[in-house]
Length: 329
Image (cartoon, rainbow, N blue to C red; front, side, top):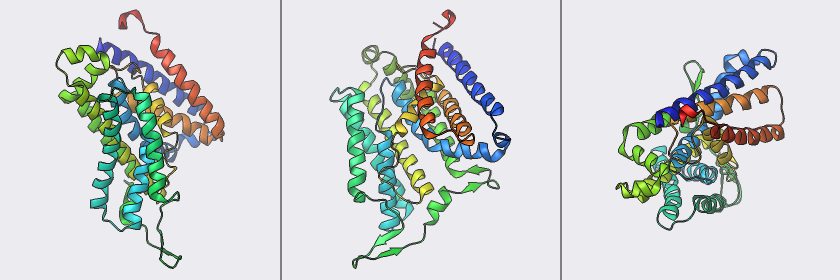
């Protein structure tokens, strides 16, 4: 049944991707869609959202939802920029500190859900507000950049660290962005967790039927904690990449990113009811959203229209999931 679901969902997700690519061929903006730079920039743009979507995939398969991913990204971007740009920490120390902080944020959500039985929507909504406030508190409500405030009120401008430049660079003759490679690495890690580890099987079991999983000896609370903790860790990875791309830590960074991450997972075909899905479907969903946004961008479609289309597509994707052929049931 699980494999039947994946085959059906993959076919639908690929059909949606093919339809979007066909739109790009038809509305190619005077040939812009056929240039490699368009595709390279699409992958670079969608990579941060895709990293968030990897964590969201784990959470949704476990039967939950994580509304805090955008705020944790913003906090992580500010925290990392503060450590490296303002305090002069080595990236070898700042990266683990930032990853740990992101994981702790995810574990906080997981604890509220697994130990205190709060609904995932309420728990992650609370953390979404808290993490955004934390980002603004540690940044003083301003962007953290290379401009360092001095005691006399003046500013001293420092060079952008090499680590930031490396994360924001492109490899193979400028044909692939480093952040895209990081996204693919996160996809690989998530795929290995779901397909090869016992904990991955536990995620599916908890999302499919939590009570049955508990009676079967699955550590339900620990499984949820790990799912949300890994989601928070991936948020920190995305936040570091976001800070490197913008060369600053913006406390408003990541606002509404959770919507795009959810859209990627849903459009890919992972079930919002939990227990069914895969990281491969999420990768297809990321490409679908990425190409859709890029096609709208090169055709100069306004942001308001893009947001409305994304909302319509999310609803359509969920409705499409509910219509299943009898052979797949």
